[in-house]
Amino acid sequence: MDINGLQARAVEIAESYDRHHVAAGREPWSTGDLTLGFVGDVGDLAKLVAAVDGRREIPDARARLGHELADCLWSVLVLADRYGVDLTTEFARMTDAIEQDLNPG
Image (cartoon, rainbow, N blue to C red; front, side):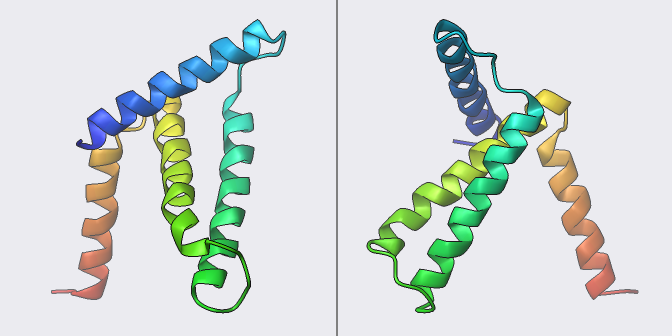
């Protein structure tokens, strides 16, 4: 699946979450809510990385790492969609700038 397919799937799931929240009498997640969830997922990812690297004890850390990376990616894809950010273009722009900084001339 390419980035557009991943993003479409992420948005589909976000819309399902929104319907679930509304059915439960809650508001759909705002971009602020998504960002707070993302920050929490990044914190969970940091703990798992520490465990995989032997600096912390978490059962099944290696097995859980992929899931947490996917959680973080989901948040990024949904936030990019909500803000109208073309991640393919921005990723190319960002990596080109890094490459230029590392290899001037």
